[in-house]
Length: 278
Image 1 (cartoon, rainbow, N blue to C red):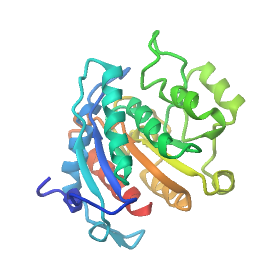
Image 2 (cartoon, one colour; image 1 turned 180 degrees about the vertical axis):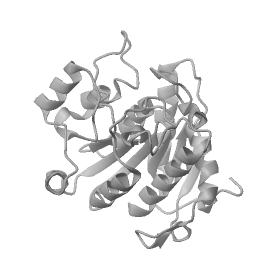
Image 3 (tube, rainbow, N blue to C red; image 1 turned 90 degrees about the vertical axis):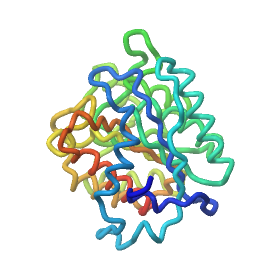
Image 4 (cartoon, rainbow, N blue to C red; image 1 turned 135 degrees about the vertical axis):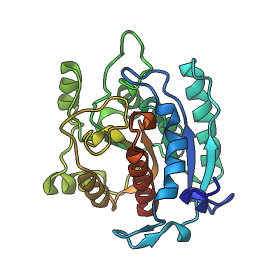
């Protein structure tokens, strides 16, 4: 990673430190492929951002974290790819670090959550996303980025899923979310209620970059108009700062869809902010 900002990562770090893990998989994308190139683009774009966070007044140089590189994946075999991601994440947890996944499509969250659950049985998942991802299946396939949160719910129960930024999905997904109370609000009252609800429970935070409006991040496979600004997303992350985040990911960057490279730079900044905040 020579020349990249994330080269601040150490070969080894103390227990509880973050460990970046690239998950370059996009085998089930339903619109525009390319998220498999996300991890490499985030690392490369990190060379264009400062190590220092003005909002947090902290610096990556003072943070001990590791980068485990990318999982080598058989792109044509979803189940085998997820097994390999799970195995790598489990190894990181057993070594005492916390996993920070770099996607890749959103389906890679499933094995990362499964690995985190082995350490934190009472895990709560907080999803920042444009799409509900609650389909029972997509064109007959149960393993799809359109179904990932339904598979996660089967692992943790709907009462431990919180969804923010959702603005797209089927009628069935909308009914499921409303019936199970998974949808949250980012106004002051909504975020305060969320913090009270979660308390000190361990949290897996998954950030699908398409929660941002395409005007702010066009480089994603399934853009959805009407989304958050970059400033809103950074504010939400700040409001969630009191949560006990034990694992996280940033997914669905498709860098080739934004020739300007700005989407990858934004993703790298968000990774920096998340590493420093938790």
